[in-house]
Amino acid sequence: MVIASDGNSDSVAGCAMHAARTTDGYVLLLSGRCTMKQSPILQEFARETLEEEAPHPGVLPHLLLAVDECEYMDSTFLGCVLSLQKRFTGKGQFGIVASAVTRQRLFAACHLDRVLNLVGEMPPLASEPRPLAPQALSAEDHAQHVMECHRLLADLGGPSAAAFKSIADALQLELEKRSR
Image (cartoon, rainbow, N blue to C red; front, side):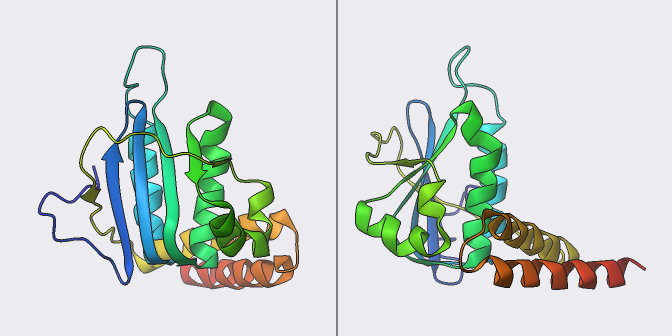
């Protein structure tokens, strides 16, 4: 599990990510500036928690992101959120807790406010929030992650789609060059 055991990983480059148990899974409390440095942490935590054994027989675990304390999300982090949405929402496992103001500030520019599973209420916490541990990736794995996140954003369309596609295409070319 990517929860830090020592409590010393409160912030990774300006973004604090704390996980707490709920009756049906987890809530991840995000604050600060969430960027490409933290998106692999989010992805790994979601993979581990949503693919684990159900908390109750026949019930899939849930993960909610609480983002009202988040100041900013870069395009890679937004693409990672979209990736998790695509992977887990069909099973009713993933959602985002955000006020109307936060939805507008973080998601409207990329039209994610139209596609994300946004919920209005935070469930009661069943445990104290604990910080997530940093996630180390190789340069190639990180570039692959950034490319995939931007490709998903480009596929949404909208005013920034061409820029996201350009970033994804450039990273894909770079990865292909490295693999030769």
